[in-house]
Image (cartoon, rainbow, N blue to C red; front, side, top):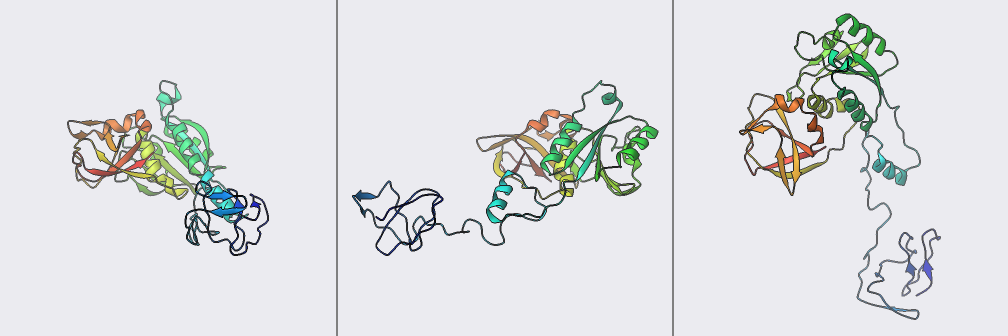
Length: 308
């Protein structure tokens, strides 16, 4: 045994038949080709003996944990994990400016304080996880002229405008009607169907549904793709009950809870998924995850659960 190497020491050169003590985090000396764990090493004075060790044992080569071509995709948000990876690979990362997104809730019941504005904070929070800079700009009333005036003013100084509510087919659902150019209106997802996207004065305008879980679903499954590449966390579980899902061209989103490998969907009554009730349930945002289904599910069936 010839000395010790600690983290921060300059790499040394090791001759054949020699050994050196290496602390965790220190580089192996040039010429070293295996590591013997101290737990199994037998040391007497400066002599090392112990179990037979193969060449390359416990040796990690520089860059071996991340291969060329792996890592961060273009459009990824630099969260704490990706920033650590980027820091290990390069000192400079080319990024784009975080988009400034104006958020407007809508509804007389919110404007007058009869009902709390839950969608505004929900959308703003989701936007932050997508790398955007949300700005809550207020609450739209249920009056076409006032809505038009507020939306016109809101277009200044933002890259994207998002509204919640006023996107369905109700008599006072005026917001989506303010689109000057509509790209699409309605998606084949339940909850979250009344979603519209278009332009107002060359500013992208997203009209989200007003029901809380409908808002969350539309943001998570559709609108998020306007901003970044999401890292979806998925696990497999067994569903704890049979759920009837009509094959009507919609993708149904079942929210529920995980426990010991079992997924329990909420708002399933007598085997039927009550999607209209589920979409209004703010408590749905407290679920562990959701399952995407385009047909009925049998009890005990293995399902992919997208974690929230």
